[in-house]
Image 1 (cartoon, rainbow, N blue to C red):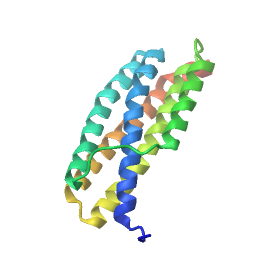
Image 2: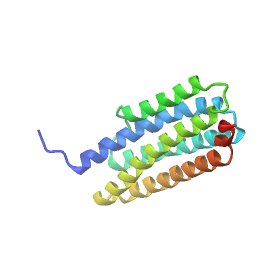
Image 3: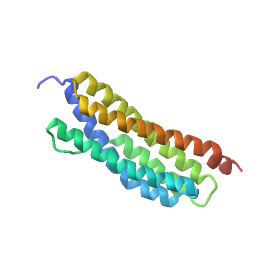
Image 4: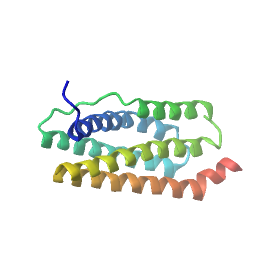
Length: 163
């Protein structure tokens, strides 16, 4: 068996985040529907549109590598999404629901930021300049979404949950 290299790890992680982004796309409409806050609902809808672009960027990276886009089961994102579903079930109809949704969404964002940061570092190391640019663009958007969620939590949804 040949020894695994950074290229192998890079490709494996690319498949992981591709799987994750496609599952996030399925979860976002459910989160938007469950949200009470109009701002949170709009934020989820906006991020769904951004996530569609993230998937397209990942497909472009696969193309740059000469590979077919395909995912690899990502147990981490499945677990985070499952936790979000539990929050929606357990806190439905309560003031705490939106705070829980923000928490679940930020868990997703932090996972994505970790993955895109790692992929950007590896892309640079491996000389995948175009992929690096695509990862950095997505990373910037994920960080902006996380920031928006934090502001929304601090300015309204956490206050309502505590009332």
